[in-house]
Amino acid sequence: MATHVSCGDLSSRKNHGNCGPDSGKSIKPIIMEKIDKLDKQIMEIISNNARIPFKDVATACGVSRAAIHQRVQRLIDMNVIVGSGYNVNPKSLGYTTCTYVGINLEKGSLYKQVVDELKHVPEIVECHYTTGPYSMLVKLYAKDNEQLMDLLNNKIQGIAGVDTTETLISLEQSIKKEVPITIDED
Image (cartoon, rainbow, N blue to C red):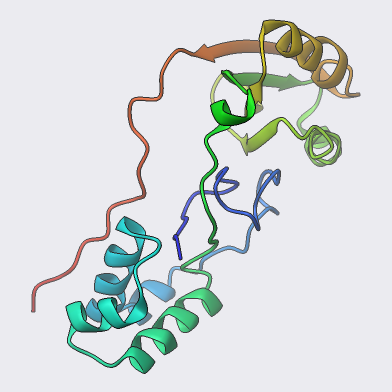
């Protein structure tokens, strides 16, 4: 079981293709008080090895398998662990171009309508409502530059409310990891 903390992460089946503030359930600040040292140990182990059996997690944590199962289920119910699944290498399916597209909207109030249209573009794997130079930032995969141009010109820029776009092609992904899980020493 893999853990995913980022909104709309490619590897999270539940969040695939979703965007913005309504894409996932919000985590209330109070939850941090409910996450104890054992929860953090469990999350650290399963986020480093998504396929580890619960019995091995239990051994590493010094508790029963049932305790691990209950804790993981509680963390899922609290939306601390927000997705699970296998990561597919996009290149193995022919998607060789990873691209980030900054999108500026005609009006910020059009955000939800634009998101609804972007959800219909399967090559878009992440979408974020942002501050800074863009209203939105999307991550997409294309098989080649010709497909990328089609996605930009005919799909994204054709959406009502999209004013301008700026494209940044990723040459290499150098870092990919989960947020750090700090375990307080008592």
